[in-house]
Image (cartoon, rainbow, N blue to C red):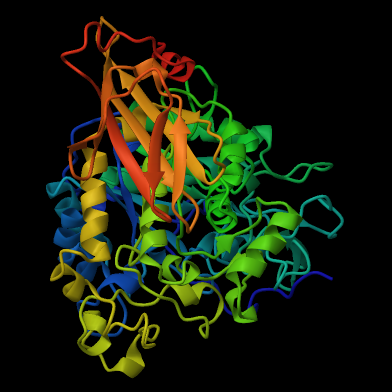
Length: 612
């Protein structure tokens, strides 16, 4: 049976000013000030460290219990100190908030409790002043059922917006499309008692899908892009892009028409907003996701895409104490255009999704990481990083080291740098969206409101409660997880190979050790400019490993966190011993006293990475 219709189908549509031809008069970017722009750098995202912040959760400036844009602006110095290059903001647009803001009511307005468009421009300008870029979520696939476009579509089928959504007299079409939210939805069609037709939705029934077969919808969404890009944002994370089009006899995902529209978006950005980026949120297998980069030779769609299947396999590999899950998925990942980059993450504002694993692997993850049924949500686990790793400092450091060194640009989730906990007693994904813990004072320093007015309660338990885990206390301890994370980000920034270089896994006889090279070269003599060796012990026990580094015979590994030189590499196997869940980052440097140092042949992966 189809889902029920909008919550209040008899509610009148919100009044909007209309043009003479019946179109809604949209807010213009010319009505606002614009933020300063950072210098154009077409590759900035390749070496960037991204920091995801929920506006609602970060800092409350007006003491109403909800974080806001002015509060976020007040904390920009902290984000700059941490070393983040780009802030990623999930939706802050006007919304009825039935899906955490992903149900957008007005693409050109800020949710009033967060502030105004003017507040956002000020925030953006202050971020740019500190050299921090800002990428925002944009939900392209659907709107809220309270959006003016949908209200006009359901009330005036023959009007300008009558064909803005996917309507049908029956629910028989597109039966091969899966239901994504299996916990709450029984159909992708919902009956609307006003229009007396079914409308299509891939997500919640209150989020009707836009009809991208209508050219006017495409033009309207391109104008939404222009609105925020004019104000000065540095790019978009395009939410739910695989589902833009529908075709009978398909699963309605990753269709050619979707890629054609993304090429249109990219053409607009390249021509009108050089240096801005598009990041695809496509929870798909790598062989499907690479299509979102566009043509392999030129990369004419998204600049970045998240590598969803890698994330659960990091957790799997460490728990199994075996590198195979990571090695396998990276080996299955096709090459991407030189202009493109993966985005990688450990946790974010959603559940730890297990869609891109096998049934057997999903059962394993549940058995290892879910000790209470409340920890599950949809097809995933709604827990933060520290509780998943049982607050084990060695594991937290290992996972972060993997995040910062594997191929792609890393995304840190707010609070993970201090080991924040979660609250599985809260509904759905709210478990991992609690207030940022700034101090041990009332409300964790997040807000001066009465605790009962907070949008969500602060974490209170003895292990993860804000009295024990907060930024203030960790700032005062140089041995804290916060200071350690900042130091590792600083090391990463000093070596562009982490973001731009070829990746070559080094095999060994010890399956518990994952080792790889990040190699980047430059100059007419083709000598190495940056070669990083990363060695990771996925086991809780000390491990020894012998690596074939003969290609670098005569070179010296210099450990990056302490600038400590290790014994010179020879033609023989190079032995290292690592503590449980330990890791090494080395810069491999030619020994200036060795004749011919620095002239060794590059690997095939590095060779491919530098070809024009």
